[in-house]
Length: 194
Length: 168
Image (tube, rainbow over all chains, first blue to last red; front, side):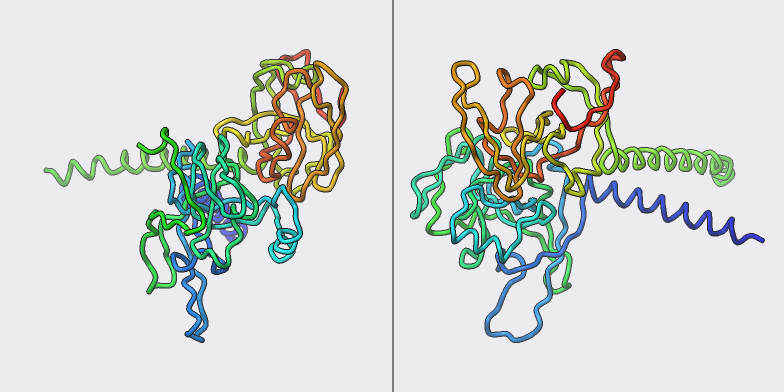
C-alpha cells in the first residue's frame, strides 16, 4: 500500500508551500481587498449614478518598505487601526460604526510626515510628532482619518499599496500624487522639503 | 560535444537546485516560527531594572499578543511610537477601559494622576520608574504596536527563570 506514503508527501508539500507563502506575504508583498469608499476615486471608485454591483478592488501591498520604515508624503499605506485617544461624542459614534480592533486594517494616504505642520479649520495648527504621520482618505466626505483621530504612529503601518490587481478593467499602478484636501493645509518642514 | 558537457553537468545543477530549495525552506520555517510563535531578544538599557538587567537575553512568545490576550502585568516588547525602527520592553499597566494612576514626577513629588486607557490602547511603564520613557510621557499606545510577550530569561544563567505577570 502506497497510500500513507502518498498522503505524507502531499502533506509535506502543502506545509512547505504554506511556509513559503506566509514568508513572502509577510516580508515582500501580499494581496488584500479594499472595502469602503474612503479612498475613492483612487481605490473603489464610487459612482452614484450607476446602480451596477460594485466590486471591491484587490490591491498589491508591498512590505519591503517596513524594513527601514521609509515612507514619503503621498504614499497610500495600510495600517492597523487604533481608536481615537480623545473621545468625544462624534468620534464615539464613528467608533460604533467602525469598531476599532487592533486586527482591523485601514487604507489611507499619508498627507504629512514627522515634523510637518498641519492647518485645520476646526483645530489650531498641529505639528506631526516624531515617528508619527498624518493620514487622510482621498474621499474627504466619507473618510475617518487623522482629522478625527489625530496622527498615527508609523509603527502601525503594515505595507504600502502599489498596484490594483483586480477587477481586470482597473488593473494599474497606484500613484503617490498628493491631492490635498482643501481644508487641510500642510506646511512641509525644511528637513523634508528637499 | 557541447551537449555532452551539459548532460554531464545536469546532475550537479539538479543537486545545487535541491540544496538551495532546502536552505530557502529552512529560512522560511525560521521566519514563520519567529513571527508567529516565539523569538529571542536581547534587552538593552536600564528601564526595566530590577526585573531585567542590561544585556539579558529573553524568549518572547507571539501567540498571546496576536490573539489579543495581553493583560495587565505582562512584560511586552512594543514598537516605540516615537521611532518605528526601535522596539522597547515595558510592562503593561492597564488595558483598554482600565483606570491607571501614575506618579507624575517620581524624582520630586508623589503627585499622582489618574487616566482611563482608551479603547484599543494599552498603558505601558518601565519597572524602573526613575529612568524610563513610557506612557507617562507618551500617553496610551495603540495595542497593535505590541509585538510579543516576554516569558523567559535565558541569559545570563543566574537569571534563568520564567516571567509571570506580576512585579517581582
